[in-house]
Length: 296
Image (cartoon, rainbow, N blue to C red; front, side, top):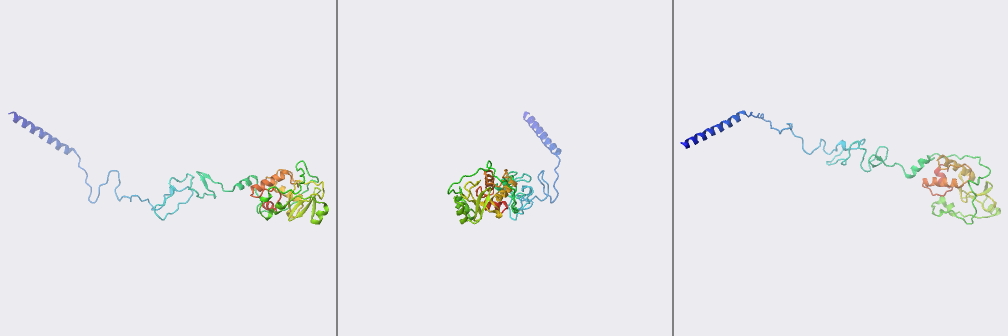
């Protein structure tokens, strides 16, 4: 009897479980079947032909956004040509050596390199050179007596040579390399040189395109400079000096008086101009300096 009851209970429980499963199946909605010829797509992806993987819109052409702003995109013919990584439009940073508008080069992010030479910067600060515009010689009304306070007299030294002149190469500096102070009387000077002029009472003789002091011609003569002075436009030494002083004033090198004397201030101004323009620092009026000033 017990066995029969157990069997009945087991059969009843199995029937209940089976019925519960059938009810559960009825409650689930039926899935919509895809139409014929249509392939189911994963959730979140559009249907249709997928794009080719790994290929940009234009094969071999770098994205325009990788170019520097203002620089046209170069057309690449081969695959794998791209602009440098990390460069984007509007950053103001170009590839090394790339030319920027205005002809300069970038030395850093957003910092243009210098377009001009070191000497050009110095010249620009002091004034524009008269390159290509020859300066016409002028005649100046100079003082009758020299201002010895601003231009002290130099003392004669027999056989004195110009310091540093042996390093100045070229025929234009031969007169400086060969110069030696000599003391002679008037007779000697006239017998060796037929062209002598007087400036502030001091005699100068002409030789190889330069004016030089005739030491001893007038024993008490005053000289502010013991050396050659280029014979510019056939002018006497004082007028040559005055023209050079005026040209250096216009370019900001000379701040003194136009007095026709190569005193310390004038020699310093000449040396500064020569240094800024890549010339030998003779501190004197030589042919290369006058040519650079547009005077010769």
